[in-house]
Length: 151
Image 1: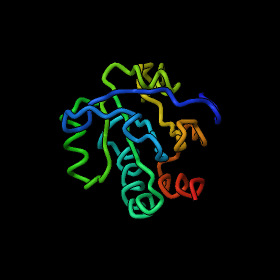
Image 2: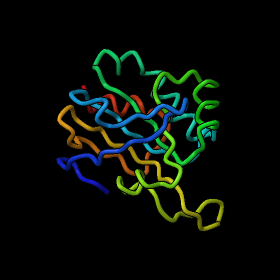
Image 3: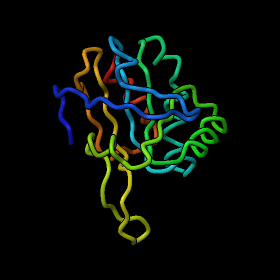
């Protein structure tokens, strides 16, 4: 895992609409970068909706939220629309960005060894350094928990 105090790795990924989003786009602003395994699965829905439900508080704190998975753009667009998610969902199709954030690799899913995205979250401060790390996240109430370390 990356550690607090480290510079967050820069990235450039397409969002659910195919528009390019970079970490630099949020320079001077705190950013929650959360990695999740698969759009519209129960845990990922719970996690995404927890950020959505806290969205006004994130906006009041001027904190951006970026969800990253290896899902294709069409799946991200559908997920965003279905749950009215007010933040970007980014497609890291080959897991390059997730690997840079120590959030991609081999794992066991339903007894099978697969490569995929781990459920980790990083809070990046306005200066680009990592100020908080959440590894192996419990999706329930995660948006509120992350917000509590930003306050």
